[in-house]
Length: 344
Image (cartoon, rainbow, N blue to C red):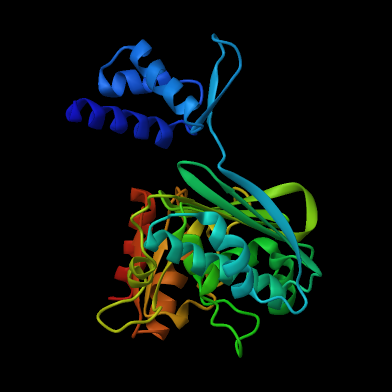
């Protein structure tokens, strides 16, 4: 009986872990995965519904299954005089429940860093903090009524537009208040969670742990203020230390390595061909020892662009290590051409 019970728990955990991505096909998916009948899967699902782990919606033919929320709550806070650690201890932590220590540590880091940003930088009056927890994962969002993070960065750094502000955030070590902030909070928070997003002004920035490249989209109806969204699996094995270590080179601890999403240096579908585009990509990367240029989504680049990044910039910063990843053959050929021209 122990073996049967253990297998049943495994099946039900699979259903909980995958139902959000497959709300209408979870029965077929589970049946195929464990080689059991659909009736057997339905029995497991019914048990999860009874346990209030799942919610079933619609009739039998068009049945949709969703995770049953354990907690759905929100509270509005006045930002002036607010202390992020107090909100964490009194509002968030008691609602997270019995989660593993490493998961609590990630939530503590990410939440306090993001709320502190709203307190110190948003110039807003209020922040709405929302939390939703279900059997599989937890989501927390923070929405302030301030200027908007991308517009603020654009204004203070005199950048061309909001998209350029997102590129600078993606590199890391960006702060508009160097005396009080290191500029690491958003970068590391975006890498710790399964899903992390910032919605502000006319831009939506997103990073998913399972998909290393950053994503940026434009909104049709720009709005003021900033919303930060974070989601993490309740049984994640990730740790705060593992994320910090990933961006520290050698044995010396420090944030000295970054991955730069090259696609964010372009607007729309434009080709990356000019030195000005390359300089936009290279802004502030000299703050790192190791830079990896991620060419995901880039089919080709121009000679001037490649030359500026891999020959001109490198010659001015010989102490830095520059690498590239996920490049097409055409992109790689252009980079190699730039590197070889430096040897002539």
